[in-house]
Each structure stands twice: as C-alpha cells, then as structure tokens.
Image (tube, rainbow, N blue to C red; front, side, top):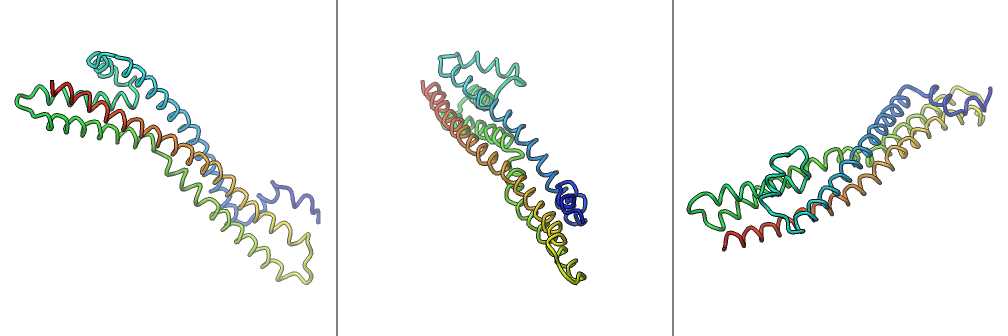
Length: 226
C-alpha cells in the first residue's frame, strides 16, 4: 500500500465516504457563500458610512433644509441611508405643517414616526445576510464534527474485518474524517470575524442615525414653535 499516495489531500477527499463527501460539499458551499456576503457587506457598509459622514458634514455645515430636501427627493437613487431618513421626516413635517390647526405635538410625532420607519427600513437592508454569516459561524464546526465522527466510525468499522490493524490501514480513514473538521473551521472563522465586525460597524452607524433623528427633531420643533 502506498501510504503517501493515500494520505494526499485530494485522494483523501475523493476516497471519502458519501456522507463525509456530502458534509465537505456542504461546508465548501457555505464557505463560498460566506465569502461572497463578506465582500458584499464590506462594500455596502463602507459606502453607508461614507454617505452618512458626507451628509452629516453637509447638514451641519449650515445647508438650507429645503435645498437639501429637494436635492434628495429629486434624485432618490443617489441618496444615502441617512439622507432617505431625513427626506422621510422632512416630507412628513411639511405635509403636517400645511394642515390647518395641526398642533405641535401632532406634527412632531408624525415626523418622528416617519423618520423611525425610514430608519428601520435602512437598518434592515444593511443587516441583510448577516444572519447567514452568524449561522455559518455557529453551525459549520458542528457540521464538520459530524463528518469527522462519521468518518472515524467507518474507519473503525473497516478494521473489524482486518486480522491485524496497522497505521497504514487506519490513518487514511481518520485523516479524511479530520478534513471535515478543518473545513468546518475554515468556513466558520471568517464568518464569525466578519459578523462581529459588521455588527459593530452597524451599531455605531445606527447610533449616529438615531442621534441625527433626535437633533433634527429638535431643529424642526424650534421652527414650529416660532
């Protein structure tokens, strides 16, 4: 028996049992999808943070609210997340303010609800696919462990028909089983790191957006009270 040939990675994968091959294929697919979402969310979140920073600089730099509102409403496809929250709130504010007899608390409650709804839509969009990364990060090691346990079980079952067990006979079966665990970790580690990082970034972005909504509400309330 050529032990070196049997212990090559490709040979071990190809000679693995059907259940172990299925586990490896599942983990490989999960890994590819994880990396796709990792790079996708990297660009999406980075763009959202950049858009938020640019809009905050414009808004707090003394920009005219009506001019900013018309720019955002005329080109919604170019608007960032915080800009759409601003547009939703200011649009509702203008509608309620044009109503005769509208009280200040009614105007402000409606404005806050409109911004809160827009904010929730934006956060839900930014958080999309993060649950998949969390699932891959938590489940993949156990899926790989299942493949390992199954492979080792088959390796010892095959030894039952052998009069004298040797390392050359048991090593390939155990090695192919351990590959499943390695693949589970390979899929899980990047997913966990990315999930934690993106969750942290989104928490900070969410706090910035909530702070903006509160401060913008105060500005609008002062305008109504004049």
